[in-house]
Image (cartoon, rainbow, N blue to C red; front, side, top):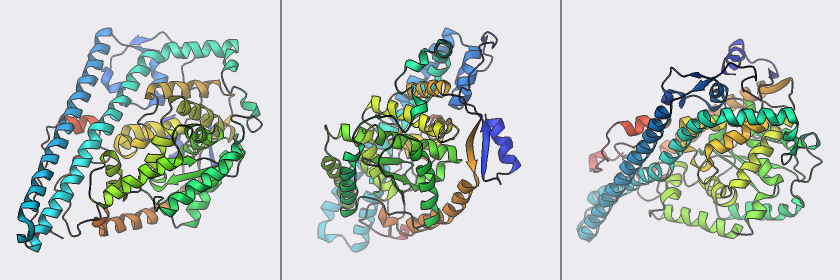
Length: 496
């Protein structure tokens, strides 16, 4: 698939729409040769994309010794890496306590420069502590979950593939839930969707009233393009309420749906998608949450007011310079625009079954809209591998195991009727990317010129001397080199 896509890209994407032959199954033919022992180290396979591994898995075998050694290495690597950053969290915490003690002892005797230096030191240490905390509690587990999922795929997919082929041959795949894909739009996935409109509107109003919703991107072409893709998917889905789409000015790699057809796409996600099929796959997944009324069902356990209260707490703690763990980290990274994460985890991400349902329905909606059905999986894989274990953590934590989602998605793609052509890329998508570039540049400039946005307390502080994590850094690189937590000091000459 990658070779074919590369050829198309190299030829120039100048047509209104670029199509590819259907690649839904991406698996070996029943006539494939028997698996052969791999001559490549097992760990090297874990760096490959999921879709490539689905093709490879039925053709290779590994010794039990290699598998056992790899599992042990992954477990040891995760434990060692997490312990390192847990220790860094504690050390930064001790430095914060020490600086606060100095601040308290100095009292009124401190001159303005000394007080400013201590404020900056505390502020920077809090940022470093938050980063180390999210690495230990969220990012590192994400990264190793991803590696473990790819190992499970290599070992378990051959049997799963044979089972799926048998179901196709016997027709029993038509007995799966929501197999009636030719009736999309006429099915009743979850009745009374219209009852959610008022709830969703109240939620949006409350978010705006409390200032917890990021502002919309001020670009009419971008807003209209994303709405056009979302409308296309919605028209080929089981959604029975009007769709309201907004692109938010937020660096977070995320999208979330509120009940009643309110869909929010965050700018960071638009930066990361590489083609229209990826974007459509994410949108289809979010629309599926609304068609299945997952928000409504979960609100029976946790009211929307409670969710807002938690989000408000995060914002309040950040504004006062306190500690809010993962919430504070997202606030640091996105100017306390981490609401997408809060809503995803608390409203839509706490149910394993709901996520699997949204995966299945989303793939069906992308297929019915004429898109390459691998778009969602390709984006999932890219974010999980390159940046997701920290910048897109809201996509992954508390969700079903990675390999379970990938298996279920691959099976659904195999079971769908084959379409001759599927949309991967469009000229409209490429134009959106051009429109997005200056928007991103302006936002980055604004963030750079407003360092106080991080905590909102002390202006004129030099950023921490070294952040623990660099975006896109592989987890093995992060954890392979011995690191010592930075010792933060501030002097008057160090202030900008």
